[in-house]
Amino acid sequence: MNKSLDVRERDFLLMRSSEGYMRIENNRITLVNHSLLQILGYHHQDELPDFFPEIVYHQREFLKYSAALINNCSVSHYDLSLKGCHGEEVTVRCEASSVVDDDQVVVFLLLEDITIQHKRLEELMLKSTVFEHNPFSVAITDHQGVVDVINRRFKRRTGFSDKLIAGVNIFDLKTITSPLSGLNRVDILDEIERRPEFVGEFRSVKQDGSTFMEELHIVPVYRNGELKNIIFISYDLTDERAIRRKLEDLAYHDQMTGLLRKEPFYEIAEEIKINIDEEKRSMGLLFIDLDNFKPINDSYGHRIGDMVLVECAALLRNLFRRTDVVARFGGDEFVAICPNVPRIEDMEIICEKIAATFNASALALTAENIDVSISVGACFYSGETDSHMSLGDLVHAADKNMYQAKRESDAGYQLAPLNLLTPS
Image (cartoon, rainbow, N blue to C red; front, side):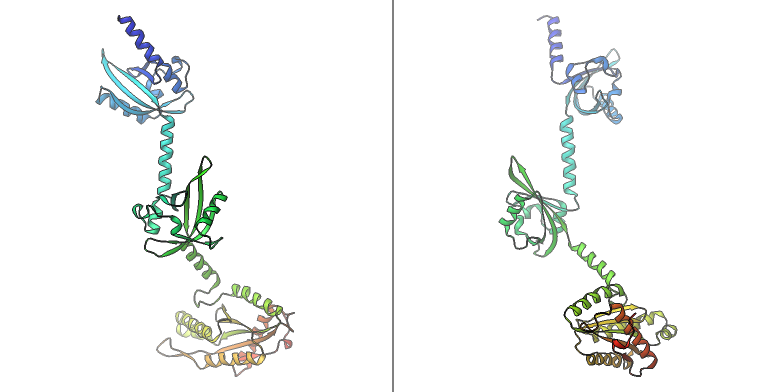
């Protein structure tokens, strides 16, 4: 075979090859084949930049390419990002060989378009990173719930490792509490297949046997219309519920005494009054104020004053029934509502007990006991005869009686019928 046939055969193979080909002489593109033009989106070679570095998408990759040529003039392999005809990034896998001819560096490049594979690999790596570092616990199971893989958060939260969870059915670790409590494994699988996403609260079991509450999102994965996998994404409710309880406690309770605050007291008392009115029952409301509290603060300081308030609140809490509602109105004022007090005489007994307990008590907060007395104003309310009065009227009446007790009563309390008081 003569030399001209060798050249024609080489050119034929070069131009018909599915791989891209590029010859670079002293960083100038001198020859490309049709496949390379297709890879980059060009129609003719003269549309390409003449200078090879101009077609390299990332400058650091050109430096990597140059270093490879300097260090190794034999065949080498690496990936490059080139610019397509519209400026888009095209990722190619290069097989390169270089020679030095008359002081010129000539590079031969075979290039395979791996843009799609590269993007898929990046997506896979991204998904893997999202899966592993997801702030939620994630488990992927087969169509029956047998665990295939779990993420890092799942392991930390439950104590299970890949080895310990292998072959375990996830439904053996979880019991639904809402919204469809009592469902067994088959029922839940039926619900999962009926819905694009199943959300419920589950009680879940850790590796050590302890349990915790979580909100679980269950997502079915289908292939060709058949359920293949189930993804379980769970959110631990333990911390959220603790925070919610703390916020509710801050919102509803006075932080010093632990008693209800004024605003939530009104909410609860309104509900009690509505029930009393509807059922034609009766109740009592008391307004309680410490006597001469300011001198205690002035003589002993605010720290001791606060301790007096805390001790007084504890005494009140012990004096009332569990069904009664006691609140701190502010400062040294307290209020209480007593549902289901049948007679006004019973209210009088309650007032006597409270006044006697306080007036006989000395609070041992310092080296010298501090005597504390109180004044109690009370009113007796009948849902049958007094329903025209509002809760504000009742508080006003009890407050008015308290001031009268402070001025006039030796007993320490004042209980006057509502019909003798003017509504506010």
